[in-house]
Each structure stands twice: as C-alpha cells, then as structure tokens.
Image (cartoon, rainbow, N blue to C red; front, side, top):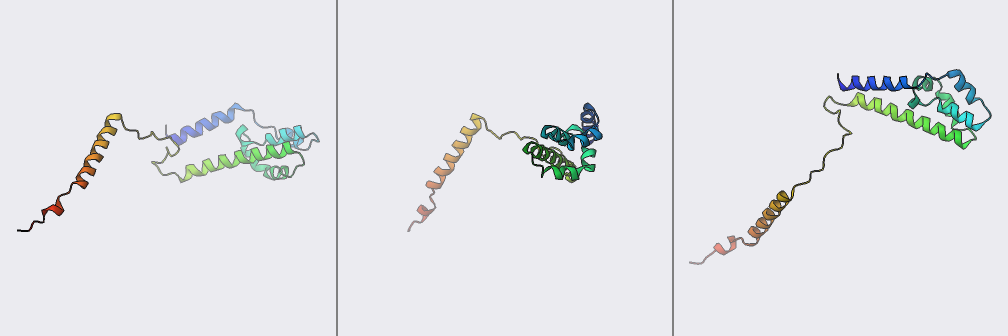
Length: 144
C-alpha cells in the first residue's frame, strides 16, 4: 500500500475514534454565559477531535471567540486555530513533495567515524603537514 494511502487510512481510523461532533450542542455551548462551557464549545470545533468539517462551517464563530472577554475561551480558540493551521500545512506539504521526498522529516544518523578511522585520518594529516614543511623545491637550485 502506498504511503499516502496508508496516511489516509490512519487519519480515517483516528477520526472514527471520536464520536461525530454534535453541532447543536457546540452552538448551545458557544452561547452559554459560563466561560468553561463556552471554552468547551470552542474545543468542540477542534480539528484534532475530528471536527474539521464543522470548523470549516463555523470559522466565523472561531474568529469571534478570539475577542471573547474570557481568557480561557481565547486560549482554547488559539489552540483550535493552531491545530487547524498545522493540519492544513501538513496537507499542503504532501501536495508539494516530490516522489522521492517522503522521508523529509526523518532524523538522519550522525556521521561518526570509528576510532580506527579517526587515527588513520590524523596520521594522514600529519603526513601532509610534514610533506609541506620539507619541500625541497627551493634546494634544487644549485650553482654549477
């Protein structure tokens, strides 16, 4: 199975873990007077909980919650917005990848040399320095 299809299968499995968001409950929570209930309503829009399509419909509500008087609601709105931006940039990055670039984010192994290779390189450097110091090209000028 190609890697892109595998990613899609994983995302579908993750979305199925959570129940479908109840839009009416989210809207009711967003209209509540209690700041904790309003922040839970904003969290209901979060795409990391499978509510990506709901967020797309209610993006104006999310933008309004940035101006909410409650710090808790504004913080949750920032979290939702941040998650949405991260998910969108991952989707866009997939579209720009070349066929061989799937492993862009993988950590590369450090190029450490073994002790034997280091000693060999040191000896080679010493030999090169010795050759530079002991050039005899200027001594070849003899007067005959």
